[in-house]
Length: 388
Image (cartoon, rainbow, N blue to C red; front, side):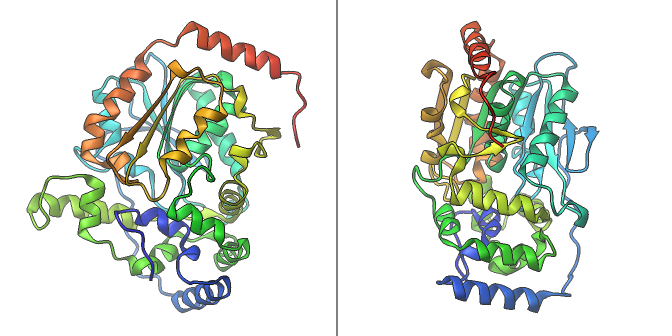
């Protein structure tokens, strides 16, 4: 079975139907046969992974929990918008020296929260992108906004969409390993997802009775096998394979990797169709909560971090946002880390070298000119009709 090298496996599994066969008809037949063969094979249920940083649940909604890592009660709130994909938000707080949460707190981010998306129950199967944007809006309002948003992978385009829909509620925006313009330079993953007929993905949702069942995707993708070298590459650890130190890290990673999220079929198909097939966010056709998303309205300061070995999201897919928004060049930063996809969020080297710069940037005062520009853009677009 096909695989993407370099520790990209959790996100490759998200688009598994695109990877298992050479033609659409073979893909559909293979997928159906594999899932029917697996039905009833419940296996052992892994324990939900726990992060290493003490936290509290500040708000608990149907679709998302707001996890509070704050060290202070005052200051601009920063929300980590975790990806709603196959695996859980613990990717940002995996282990000592592999925790983005700890890296940000150590670098001076004292009001820190995380949007932790919940696995979809059967009654959530019809939730779509609008529902998740609305949930994020409740979190922001709960914190009193405006907030700084830090979007990780799939959480990045959701954060960008939210900022464009509610620009007055976002002060600064960070996007890391985020697909924005799929056509800028396709990754192996986005190219395969784009080439696979939508009917194949719909079949996958049907087999899950309206949901995408995470454990089934993970079980089929490479038979659930993850190589130790892939784990070492993602964690960027100097600990040699076979050492007691690496064995502990490996066990922690494998537990996180084994516990999967289920996704509403509606949301999953909207992501496939709107982002990966139609590229609507980049081309201006994306409609969210009743309004067409116009990225030219955004003047917010932005920080973009990509990985040079990321086969899930190319740097060009992320950096293309600089041409889509109207943020002044001096308020837009771009960096490329020597990292694969997961290494951007849990790699020791990336956390030590790149994230402190992001934290320092977040703590800089907002330039008055930027705030004025954004307010003017909001006023200018206020009378524009919205698209249904």
